[in-house]
Length: 93
Ligand SMILES: [Zn+2]
Image 1 (tube, rainbow, N blue to C red):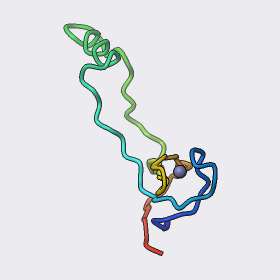
Image 2 (cartoon, rainbow, N blue to C red; image 1 turned 90 degrees about the vertical axis):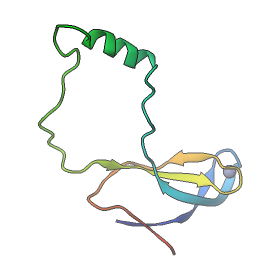
Image 3 (cartoon, rainbow, N blue to C red; image 1 turned 180 degrees about the horizontal axis):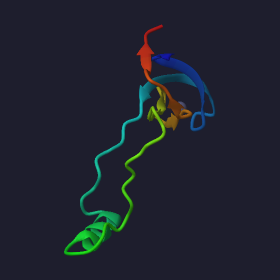
Image 4 (cartoon, protein in one colour; image 1 turned 60 degrees about the vertical axis):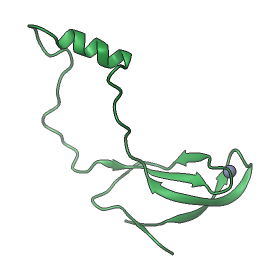
């Protein structure tokens, strides 16, 4: 799918339609000292089983791609709907 790099969308902060910059959302780096990570490491340490199941047989073919819309006036960002696509392209228009 091809999506234009710029879009006109409603901005909740500006309370009007403004130009938005479109980009693809990417997951940030996991924090090593987060509570859940520390708890998981504590459970995983030493002998014993895996505390959470690891999924091996995925039935979905494609991962979801989420477009991120950023207001050019105030910088407020909103997420678009996640799409299962083989190819997601941002094009100039
Ligand atoms: Zn705005």
